[in-house]
Length: 360
Image (cartoon, rainbow, N blue to C red; front, side, top):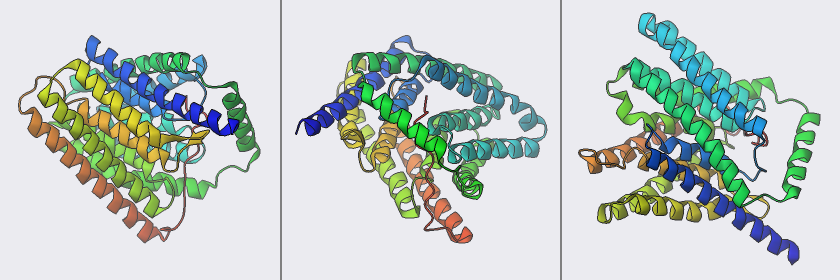
């Protein structure tokens, strides 16, 4: 009985840590007001949605460094994109495949996720405006650094028990002793994620006003990660359900903001959503069943609401259009994944990226 009670308390602590850390990162970004500040909350939510001990200082710095490397690579790719478009596109595709393959071979899925975002978003914006690409690069690096500060603060307020670190150490030891992932399966996972994400990136490389729909491209990159969680049916369910739930939750918060437009209401609304969705993320001593699907829903809420708040013309129309485009991208991602599995004859194969035991 005591064990069951301690498990409940542990999951509740993690839920509060997720909600508080995400909300503090969001509030700080909005108060300071740097460009795309909501991305700090997106990064924090992704890390805090894992049942892991607090990231070490070295791990946090490595996370920011890897993000900066991906963003810097994206800036360098602007040279071939503007001079030799085909070469630039091929290099971006190879880079994304390398990142997805890295995750499938046992690398940190969190680092892979945000490296893919950095490598995709910067060239897409830079194809239209180099200053915009430089701006988003700086904003993402600031968001990464701020994210780690609030992650550490959240862990200080709601610490993880020492047993968790021991369990993670045992998992890492077992992983190190196990045979390495099959390179063919890893390559398949990388190609599958690339097939889901790369056509969307190509679209954003050629259409005007890419900066207005940057969050849709970010959503597409997260779909690349989701496409390799379980078999086709499970991945399709995760992709569609997280988008629908995230869109509905964002719509509810947006409706309240139309009645009472206030930063306090915005922050409290996100806090409430994080608490509700967090109950579906954690259970017992680990993740709940389909916990990652609910954490992706929280990320969807943040990327929908983040660019929408503020006094912008036609805000309601842009908000609705953003949700619609995310649904379109999600449906495309599901169809692309199913087509890839159909033509490769691997519809029932389950390829799951490594657990995020080394996430940060």
